[in-house]
Length: 147
Image 1 (tube, rainbow, N blue to C red):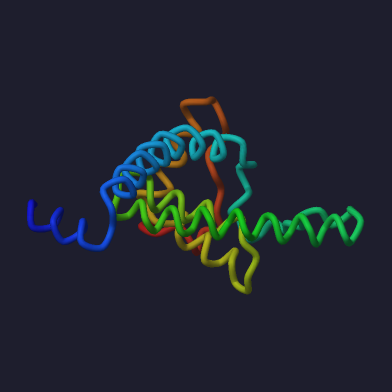
Image 2: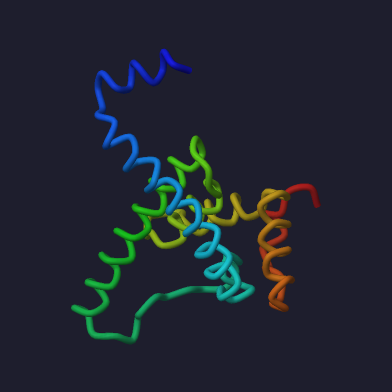
């Protein structure tokens, strides 16, 4: 362990390492609060590809474009944070899923459904939703693994 610390100190100052540690703790605590808060507020059919979703479709084009850019930037931040949380404390997979759900790209809904369809993820999210008396998520049967 001392070898790792000595190697890191060659490239990164102690102050930066302390700052990264503090940021990691805040991200961990923030993810423990934000992720359940967001998952509970999603409609139960949010990840069901049989239900169409159109974000801000009735708004002015400039407002829609700026909203889409902002939403994608937030999604990229969550995706990167989730990837980092795979190696640091935090809910990495759920944070990455949240990032993906914010972003817009081809076949996104199918990817979301495949991730949500994993029994561990699906059951974890539905357990969180059940604690807050929310209806469980629904998915197209083809995306629920183990059934």
